[in-house]
Image (cartoon, rainbow, N blue to C red; front, side, top):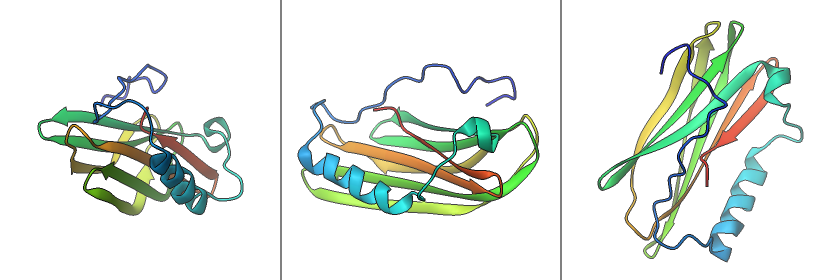
Length: 142
C-alpha cells in the first residue's frame, strides 16, 4: 500500500460463503468474542490519530487477510487481530498480536494470515489497536 492510499475508500465486500444470511450462531460468536476483547471505551480514530484497515483477498482456496495501520504522527503500541471462521465442520478462531512503531503518514502492515475458506465458511475479522493516545478498532466489511 502506498502512502497516498485512502482509508476512506469503499473496500470490496469479501464473503466466503454462498449463504449471505448470518446465522444466529455467528451473531452470537461475533458479540461474545468482541465484547470480551474491547475495552470499556474506544476512542474514535480522529482522537487517537490512528486509522486501521482489515482487507481480504480471495486466492483459491484461501482468503488472505491483512491488518494495516496508519498514523499522521509517530506512535508505538500493540495490536490484536482476531479471526473467527464458522462452517459446517465447526468454528475456529485465531488471534495474532504484537507491537508496532508507526512513522508519520506511512502505512504499516501489522499482520497477514491465510485462511482456508470454503464456499460454506463465514469469516469475522477485527483489529484492535492500543496506544498511549487511546484505542482504535476496525473490522472486515461484511
